[in-house]
Length: 368
Image 1 (cartoon, rainbow, N blue to C red):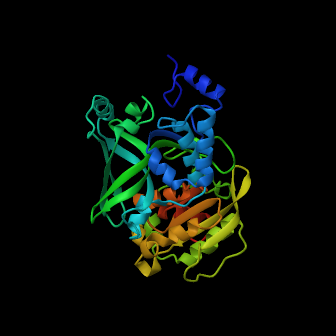
Image 2 (cartoon, rainbow, N blue to C red; image 1 turned 90 degrees about the vertical axis):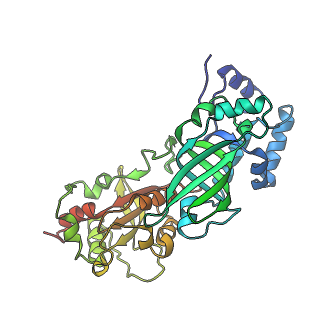
Image 3 (spheres, rainbow, N blue to C red; image 1 turned 120 degrees about the vertical axis):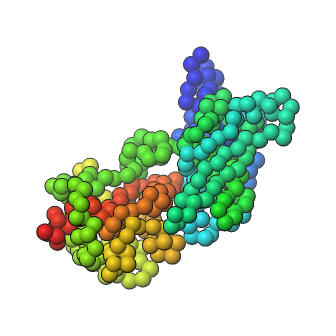
């Protein structure tokens, strides 16, 4: 039997297209679990109207018509702001009832067995998930929750939600404590992220188009990016203003703004060249600040609870760039990726750590 990506028989997909539903796959969301009643509370009258019109055309729309709900969820996510859970936690804004999203490796219970138990009358059986999230200076949060396995969308859900698998989750915060968060899922899915230049969407996490390696920047083509043992020591005494001037010179950006509190970014350019054309880019730069910031970057070093990243993400830049004079911790990169993965405006991002910075400063003649 031939199955497509959503677990539907190809013959069934043809029948659904002939009835006007379109193919099973949605454009950016492959849903394995949908709580349709809760999703309807998110949707506005236009979305609910589309669902009702579809119901009239296709002899009734009830639970199980997952394509229609996945399509409306895509439209909703492309229009409305939803905070990543890690950002809500890091900024202290996480509260019960809040709608959040996260994309991580989850440990799943045996959803296939639990689904079968539901079918045989065990109405109280629920499936569960758990993962951990780094949200600050070494602080780890347990994220967990349960869901009704009878709301799984296809037989493929038994495979996709099994063992340890990476998935996208949209959910309400059911409880939040000092070191754990309970979520109530509205949707669990594999997500594709569409690049802004219109190329084909790619599976998340980490679609190839999204993270820009420093060596891909055309103005940096002649820079030798090697991990030099002296790199971080050399960056210890180099002021942020010197780094800004050097980066602007390498890129060919003539405007170097003065620093002031609350700015969206430290440097802005429309001249960052990638794949043969100029891109707009916003930079957040972190120098040693007399030595106090010469250490691995944490979220706490990016303004109050990381709000410098959020301010940069509120800019219209095509590429979000984070530079630091030392190493950059994984949770910082993860937060930057999450902000760049907002489905309203998915973008590229680039990370320039102390080793990259040293190579660039040598190329600019700032360091011998």
